Length: 453
Image (tube, rainbow, N blue to C red):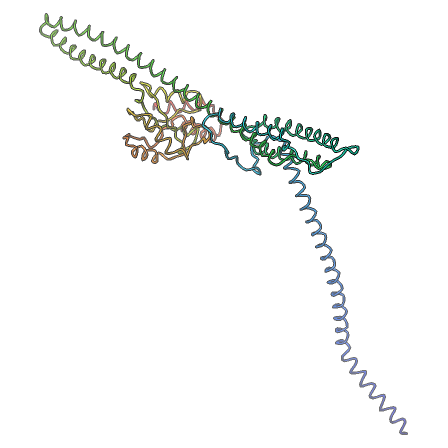
């Protein structure tokens, strides 16, 4: 074997060894290749998803921007539309707070007339509408001034006409709405005057809005005066009823007194001629007649005394949980000889259940006591606008304590009977629990029979 063959053989052996090693590590090489391949594909997917996320974020930002613009536009349009709607709950305009505090409605009218005179003065003084430019027509400044004067007049006529309509329509629930509409009208008319550089002055707008406020508060004061007049008339009617009751009671007492007096005189004459059992019987009769005569005289004196006393009467504290719920009490005053008649009247037709009496306080200063209790609980009235509605959201303990603080003594009944209300609840429960329906009359009859057993 030559040297060449030997070297060739040696090289072939080396190649075999390398092939063996290559075969041994081929699996590892294939895995690394696959990992690199998978990693490359994953990076491509991640890159693609990141692009999608960026695109989605851009779309979302665009949508949010469009939504905000659309919401602002809707809110603006909704507010403008609401200016021309009659709503009771215009929360965006806030709660109205009175500006003036006059005692009588005539004072509001007088102030309103003064405001109108100031408007007329501004118009005549050429300060209601202002032009910020010098105009000439056909080369004449005089003609330019005449045209501007006519334009001012048209703007003021439009503004005053529309404002007067709004002022005439003002009510308790739309004052803030009308103020906004006058302001919007002011801006719209001034916008029309921009071409001539003419605008209605802010001072004139303020006067027009003051006129609106005065009209509104005038209407409120007129309503309050009507309520006060109704209260006076109701009190007069109540006093007239009381007066008639006193007079009727006095007449009846005088009639009873005369009858008892006559019967007593007759019995006294008869007893002088009687003896034994008849004497004893007449003697008992005389004692009884004397007692009845005293009661009739006391009744007459009481009726006469109450008729002469305008401050004397009963202050009542009543509730109606079936109609108003718990811790709602009516505190009122009556001069009736029989105060329970007044409570029965209150429960006759206006409410579904009868009132329960918690206290009936007789006093020579009944009006003082009533006013003291009303004043103490003025912040807890159920109706804050109408002071004639004498219902208060308080506890009975608070009323009893205040009554003592005012120096009056009275016995309070803590728990209301509320018979009709509780019986109604019981009937409703029974109706709901019956497997076979029963009429209300059947249930009442069944309960009545059960009570007899």
